[in-house]
Length: 329
Image (cartoon, rainbow, N blue to C red; front, side):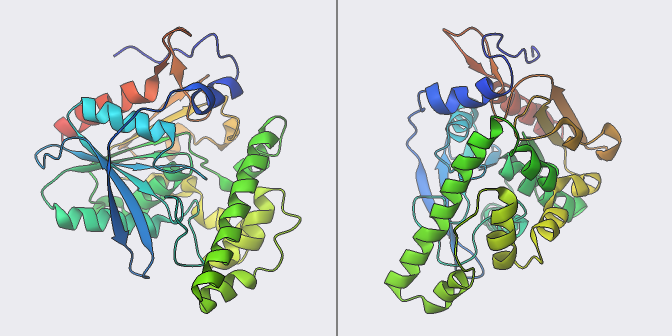
């Protein structure tokens, strides 16, 4: 397979990051939705695509912050996996499928307990089927944390993580710098709307206990950074003492050494969300983990080819790597 060569017509880190969300035509996929009930009574919506053949692997796809199973990188990867003859299932984190979830708590960069429930239920339904996973950005951080926590007991056969915010505290600082503040403003708008919409839903449905948990957060005014949101919303809702405590306990960089599943990391040094010094050194990776670290690519971009026929390296590389890896396990 040819190596990734960043598209010269998309210089820097921002243009490859923005190209797909702004200019790519969404693949049209007819998917099947499944509602998965969690142990706390909440739900996750899963979107299935591709041939339902238990003899072939199934890949679990995990989206990033304020994304969903309809994010273009998810749709494109589902299409690429189906072209390989594989089925995939795209997970919508709590409240990300177009319908608010039923608990005050939501999703966050360390919500590996939700991923553990997904993997466990899918594995129980098809115990002989090989499952793999791909996580993007926040989803990649959750996936790597889960892989480290489960170590040799992990039921997944292979995993890949893309554009990972390995150190959440440093990434919360990085996104406050320069043009990256534009992304932060968009994220903050979506995150605050996520909380406001749930408050309205709980009031309408008479879910007084869950509404009280959100009301206890106080005003949502004056939040303009990840540090603010995670200090005043993420931490109290999910059992962390502070934003700093949340970042320390959930940053995937601290879990990498325990990973035993074959794992591929794909990262760009010009990622506008991640400082280069946040990317782990080779010696921090377990023997089962390999990293592809490129000078270009942006954040979940990795565009290649000419402008009249752009290509998506992740949709070329990840299915091929998974096929090669699973054929040898």
